[in-house]
Length: 64
Image (cartoon, rainbow, N blue to C red; front, side, top):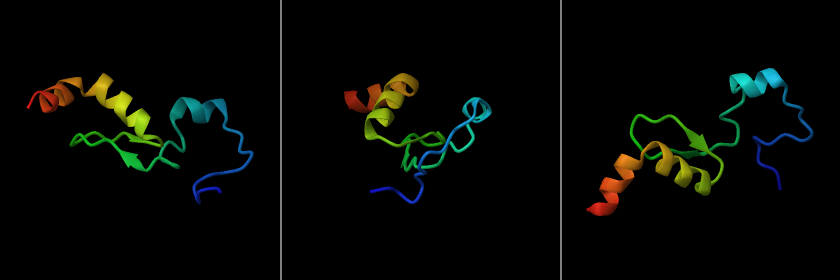
C-alpha cells in the first residue's frame, strides 16, 4: 500500500539530492525538541537524531 505522498519510479536528480528538494514528502514524525524543524519517516531515525543532535536535552530528561 502506498502513501499519498509516495511516488512510483520517480528519479531524483543530483540537484534535488543536494538541495533537499522534497525533503518533507513522507516525513510525518517531527522532532520533539522545541524549535527543531527536522522530520523523519521512521521512529528509529528520530531516536538517532535525538541522540546525536540533542543529547544534552535527552540526557537531562533521562537523569530526572
